[in-house]
Length: 108
Image 1 (cartoon, one colour):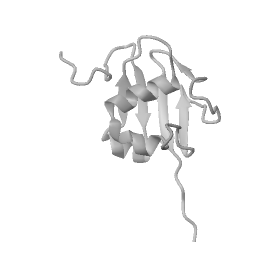
Image 2: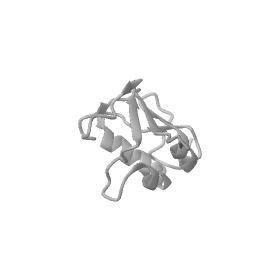
Image 3: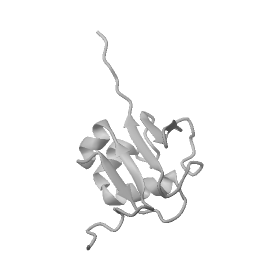
Image 4: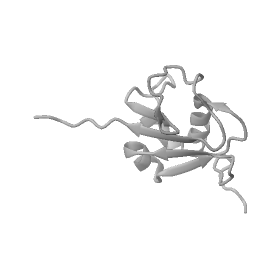
């Protein structure tokens, strides 16, 4: 099988990324699996995600490359959104990453 995008993978060593809300709409799919092969910081995983889906950049990162404040980061079911440094969150092959934009309910 020839891969059209070298960052997307069906390998058991891939990282599974679940996208919700506007992120899912921008990517056109709910789940992406990106090649890992080794432990990567969250920044590296996001880099591979953006290589595969460059249209996610404006709904995921600010102009300086920082994760937007309203994006919740869930790793293996645990909310790690409070960790400010993308380098501190390490992911290994087989981990599940969920990116969930906060939903703002209007009152009025």
